[in-house]
Image (cartoon, rainbow, N blue to C red; front, side, top):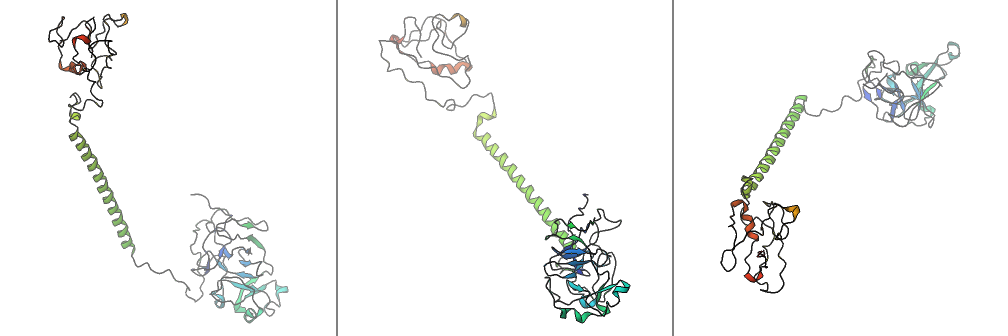
Length: 362
């Protein structure tokens, strides 16, 4: 666990026992380390562990507000007497001469309070009429030193850095056994808390747990059904593809008729002139995977030396039936099933379209 930053304002402020403040009051330190007094954002914190007071430069008020200890049992919390108990902040003063006539001798100054509306969260300048009626011993909030030294200047937002005053160094580690936000003592006031715990949500812990478990199980079932549906669709689509494409059943099976080509058939040569120059033969037609090596134009009568022994699809030393019906000399050509693809590229031509060497034109 990361160490708490001792130089920021952090924690929850209470203006009375177990009663969270409604105003813009923030801690004078980090509650993760120890309990701290609370003052208005932007104020100065005074006399830690003694008066635990605050001072506001804008209104000129010296006052007390609250604490991060909900029980106000920490020595860093100033307890408010009953007449001021419900106020979020109480201005304090030492103007009661009847109470401080001997302060020069005994060194004790009595600070009494001033009354404001219980709902007041803003610091305002108060007339002396709000303070003089309470110059009584029962209304003293703090009895001690007359000059309250500042130790911190608060930021305007909780969670921001504090500017320490008069070389004050805050503690950096919690005291043994300290837990933030827990009561450190009990100070009786005879007054019930002004704000009891928040309203009930209407649902027990067991009911909330049941709702959470039910929602989780329902979500798991929905995800499982969705995955099953996707798997079924994928398998169904694959089954349809296999059904519509019989060639996928056996990779060694030749393609069905009508699916061999994507190009037109070779051109008809019946309209070529019977005499004259020898027309150029059409380019040979190839399958996707020819059974023999790629074929260029028809082989010459005498093979090139570099291709000696190379057997073309239409060798010059073999003869095929002529248009006249007479067999050409040479051995008969047999087409097995594997070579039947070469038959598509052989065309019948008349006797006059053959050259003197007897080569057929395809």
